[in-house]
Structures are given as C-alpha cells and as structure tokens.
Amino acid sequence: MGRGRAKAKQTKVARELKYGTHDIDLERLRQELGSGDEPVAEVEADDPADGPVGR
Image (cartoon, rainbow, N blue to C red; front, side, top):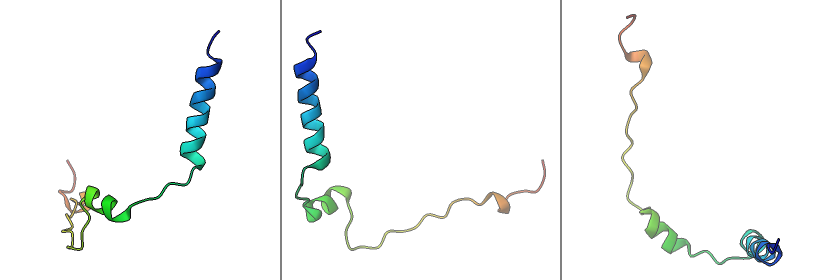
C-alpha cells in the first residue's frame, strides 16, 4: 500500500520521456560521439575461411 502516488509519478515521467518532443542538438551529439568529417579506418576481421583446413 502507499505506492499509488509514486507509481503515478513514474508513469507521468515515463510518458513525458516517451511522447514528449525533445530538441536534439545534432552538432553536440556528433561531438560527443566523436563523429567528424574525417574518414574512419576500417579494420578487417579475420575470416575463418582463410584459416588452416582441418585440425
């Protein structure tokens, strides 16, 4: 008992996060993710098909 207000508050906050309109600062997001205009070097993964045949 006594959880009604807490649950209602949680539900309200969850709805605001889910359905609320949020302004997204794409430039700031790019900076945080370290995404710039410079090309990213691709790392080749080892292909198991190129390995030794049989054990």
